[in-house]
Image (tube, rainbow, N blue to C red; front, side, top):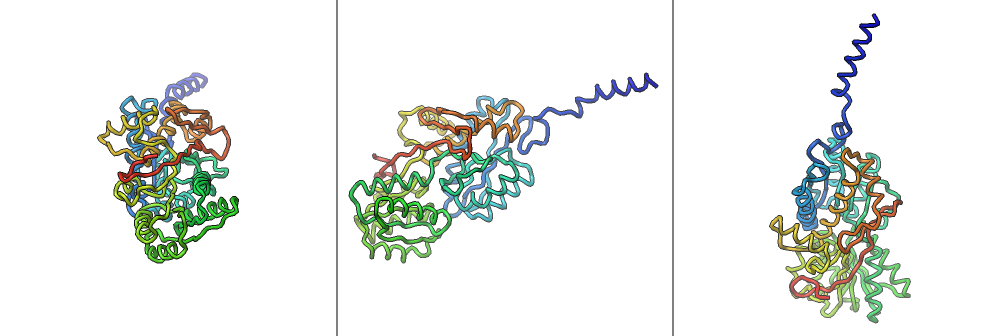
Length: 382
């Protein structure tokens, strides 16, 4: 009997490796022995389709560069994008499916304020890390343990624009905002920034995301005759808005946020965009004085992409931050280890652009903001 028990114990010891698997072989969502899958729900069609294209190009270039050098701890990093057309309901459905299928280890740069508002409770409950959502909304920068913002906030961007316009001695500053959660939040921020300077909006008008009420918005602005208009809009409606203002309110100064105009639209505006001031939350992608920009341009060229833009540079930066987190998470990563690795990032210099999470929520990595003025070619001239 004793001999039989010994044999059984010995057999169990020999068999153990077949059943006790290392962490990387367990059922970690989006993780296999050879690859790490990263999910992204973004507008690849509809009014913000340019944002999806920027993510594909910029993040795709960063991941391709990393994979060419052996990946992260021997695993390739694969970006899996799904289209939501900037519709929050579709974003929610996409992320529900990602979580339900366990198809992604983390999310990267899901696009839009209302979209990220829709998915935040879901990713918090599931413990799914989300790196660098494409939104600067203050309402989303609270104590979320799974969200690691990279870009500066919309509040910082709007305040910078208002201070610049007011500093030019302009008294009549109007606000045109998108008629959704993103635009309404920015309207409140802009109105508060003006109030702090003892000013009120010369006009405030809400434009539909599809632009169906654009003629009425243009008439309201023309009637108010402001000296400048702050554009709290995003996507293709911004292009029509800029062109309409040039025609119906000639001479009015226009200023927008980093997300106001899709990258692909900058050059198509031509002279209509000349003189438009925009905030920049990453450096100028055409000026290679920084190592970050040189690395980005090289990664893009390696993928046959020569059209550089703020949007794809932001996506490249976001992917670099995620890659850093994955490296720090080790050879057997889990989502909890990735969260801990990201929160440990202090003064990470990507080549002239610093990311620092300070180890505490809300996790906001950068407060970089610059101002650029567009020329007729769609590039910044100052």
